[in-house]
Amino acid sequence: MSAAIFPFALLRRSSREYLAFRNEVHEQGGGRRTLQKIHAAGELVVQGRILFPNPGGTWRDFEAFWAARFGGFDSFLYRAQNPGAAAQHEDPEIDSGSQTDFTLVRRFVDTATLVVKKNGATQIPGTHYTLRNESGGAYALGTSTKCVVHFLSAPGLGVNLDFDYEFLYPVRFEGDDLPDEQDLATGGGGSAVAADRTVAVRMRETGPGYSYASAPTAL
Image (cartoon, rainbow, N blue to C red):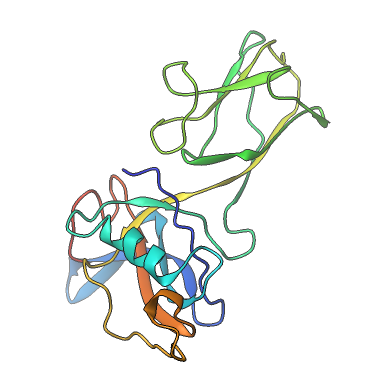
């Protein structure tokens, strides 16, 4: 997966972010059926429109971002744009008095937003803790499979820990072609400086067990 982060802002009024579930129908006999939700944790679906000019870049920037993934259905990282949708709070249990490592629930952590507190006191990175990956090396967004908070001194039993941070979702574009419904009014400025151009996008979370794993899958 590419560690690239989707930089473009979606139009708020015409965009949606929601957790989707797939359903399975089970025959129970006697004409009875039950409906079961699978993917219990849900998978993020993003659909909306992008207006150019855009804070994340120009139309040509978007074309380049899309073209880099064309043909391979490559995934990338997306920060949910609904307020609070990318926020995570954890208050982990301490298993032993010597425990120093605490693995965060989310994999793709925006480490710049991480706030670690011990008994309500904010801990300082490099002084009180460091961040590690699954093998003890430095955490790298996009390639590390785990983000571990490593305390330089064990917090000890009975201590209250709080972790707050924002995270990103691994997603990819649904389909492998730009949509046809593009609007353009350049005012004579040419495509490089197009104003009021919009493009529809649809993205879905990708990963093991999801509808979109590493290859296209029918929904």
